[in-house]
Image (cartoon, rainbow, N blue to C red; front, top):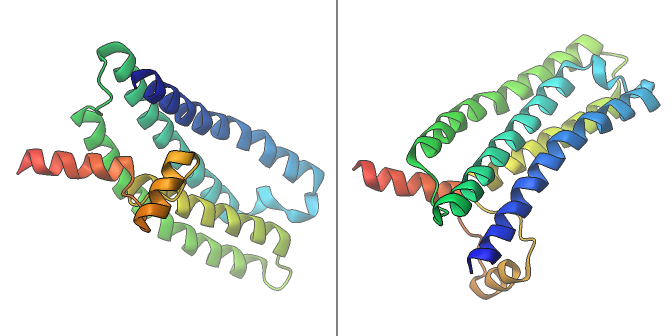
Amino acid sequence: MKKTLEKRLAHLYSGELFSIITFVPVSYFLNYAFPNLQLYTLYSFWVSFILLEFLLLQATIYWYVKLKRLRNENNPITPIKVIRQLHCLKTVNKVMIPTTIVVFVFDVIKWYPSLPLGGLTITFFIYIFAGLEFINYFYIQLSYDNVSDVKNLLRSRKLKNSCMNKDFKRILKLEL
């Protein structure tokens, strides 16, 4: 059981870290190969991209802490200090998400009438992906990437609370 959980946490941690690292050169390649997209000139791109990378970093840290604790202490329970920090970051994320919409509006006003629609479209999808990642990490698990999770989803016919959300509820109970 421990080895299975350790493998799962390592997969989650390394997947998030890989995404953080990979998205930077991918964005550079897109901007370089398709200059008409004007990605790097759009403020909304930068805010959306930073939001996504920031969320991925939070998830990377979360899974890494759980993995490290499992390996060192034979216990995957997230330390309360980490949960509190993530809960504070949840508030930061809640501010960044609507701020990004304001920046989109700013870009549309700035670039009108010669809007770089391709760049804005890509930026919009990055923003949507970031929003879904936020929900997936902090509220409801949206990613079901193993057979056990899919079977559970089909059997229960409802989405599970995210691991972080369960941790937030756990510390709330402890503080009452």
